[in-house]
Image 1: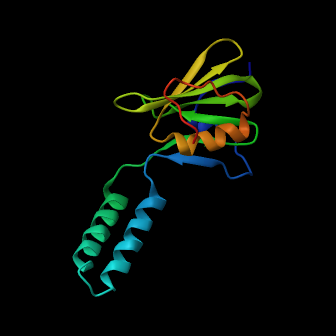
Image 2 (image 1 turned 90 degrees about the vertical axis):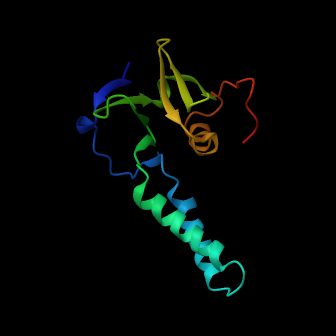
Length: 151
């Protein structure tokens, strides 16, 4: 099996920019700040709401911790281990048997089953973000859970 657990510093250098899923939703926070600025310049009752949105968005962008959860490349995906920040799991697409998004109380999981029967999982916070890439790179391998809805 080519899929393996490796140190992050030993990852192969790729000329292709990987598609990443991160903890912090930067795009949403920037949109929140933009909406707040729009409300501020409307000179209406929404000015104070706009100020709150701007302060909230900027403080989240600056103060919230951020890290990469998963990266997607044409040949493989990289799942970053939440316990040991120096190790990651490199999973090749041709070795993926199935994948499933599982909902849990604290955080959700992306569970990937490999050819040798082993499973790899990583914490997730949104099915929508990961399902798009998993369906693109591992088509027809999604194992539906009882709670899943079409996203």
